[in-house]
Length: 118
Image 1 (tube, rainbow, N blue to C red):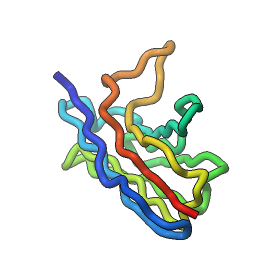
Image 2: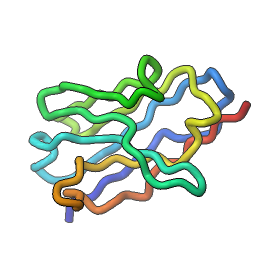
Image 3: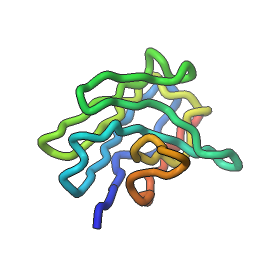
Image 4: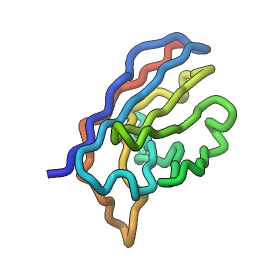
């Protein structure tokens, strides 16, 4: 069964940095566009960044210039480097594919908690 496991979260002061990792099992990882999402308390899950199988990236405006998404296909892993963190970046971070007709390729992993204190 294909699984996603996120790691690297933690408690950090505003202005600090964290690097998140998402390890995926299965041979289809290398052909999939992968993405990082986050869910703040009381809010819906939202897209943060995505990266194509060829390495083309996109980050949403709220994290542009601060977050960088990357991937290592040899390790079936996608990363999210987060710099200049703000309290509003607090939430549970997940990785997955982009949705297709409302469905995601992988089952959601447990996510990793990021808490930014002011």
